Length: 118
Image (cartoon, rainbow, N blue to C red; front, top):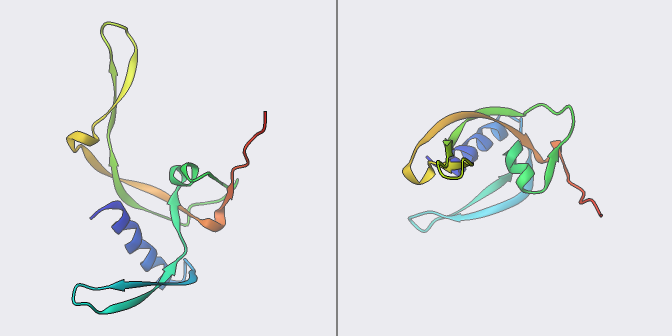
């Protein structure tokens, strides 16, 4: 399973348990047999890092709505012998992935990061 599939499965479970809300929007999905199914869209959840990349900051004092394992790739520090500089090497291309429990936050727990003017 990919991270998107893992997160979608957890979103569905949390919505069924009443922990996450539905947005009110409906997604139409066509199945392999041609049948069209309407699926209620669930409130988005992301990790702290993912929200940050989207331009949001988790509000101070907020606790994760849920925690579950997703795929992470390992990174290593490699020292360049000639320059003595360290650089981060990603093992993603070599397929060194591992499962790591991550904390997830909803859109209600974040606020847009305001850009500072210089």
